[in-house]
Length: 387
Image (cartoon, rainbow, N blue to C red; front, top):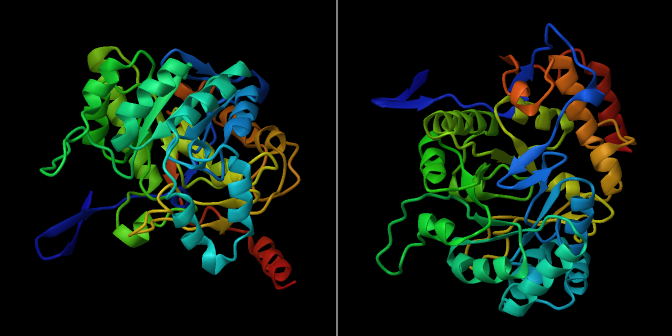
């Protein structure tokens, strides 16, 4: 339903994770018996979790750890890992920088050009550990980097920008032809980021093997404040899931959609799947692991832009190991640990044995879901904050 926001101008109501809740099912399932696997192209993941292609989250060692846990770490080919032979030294300098100097330092660090030989080196390092390798870059670099990564043995290539479309108009340069790029690859190509039904459908028709859903919801991303762009993740996921289902019905080809960003707890992840997502891409939750290269800091991919930074370095701290974040046991009560356990338990509670069944869960609009009856919890957290 649309609402008038002024004379002759309508706007559609959109929803975020804090505004909805999932309704328990009439039948429940043993959480240990649910299937949470995700298939992208010919790559099967034991858990539907992707780690964001951000330098503070994923480097080669983290990608290996993520793969060994059953998920997928996506390495940013436009970042520090492909610019510096010893990226952890640079990351340590970023982590040690004062808050007021962080963005300037990031801009300086990212001025060094990408060394293409490092792309193949990173891919081979990950593949040597016998785990799936996924890498990401912006459209401007996809032609060059795609061929290098593919030749080195990469399993999934991600073309990622703030806003992705099939049709891009430009007179000063040749627009990137995503459909042709996908046809030239022998490995699955995922594309992001998308928030609308029509664009999602066009990208699927162009041959994308998966889509990343979300513009600006990430903890370290300021795109919504700087550019005013974005659609809350519940509505964006539902709309793109509808495009996926229509495309599948028409073509017989199922293209998974991955909700990317805006999820800070297991509850948010459960809601994303219930809204139609096949998996989730998470940044800040993994930035908090002991294995993350950012050492408790996290920043968006557009942060180092020289003229218009659209991200900020944030301190998320280190709260546990990757094992604890994914599988527990939880040492915190804020929903940021044992994310896989939360998903399994929720699936059992709504009666879903598979992620596809989870996508049919009844959803209610419930803006009071986090505050109803939580007076003492709120008071306790405020008291702890004063300390």
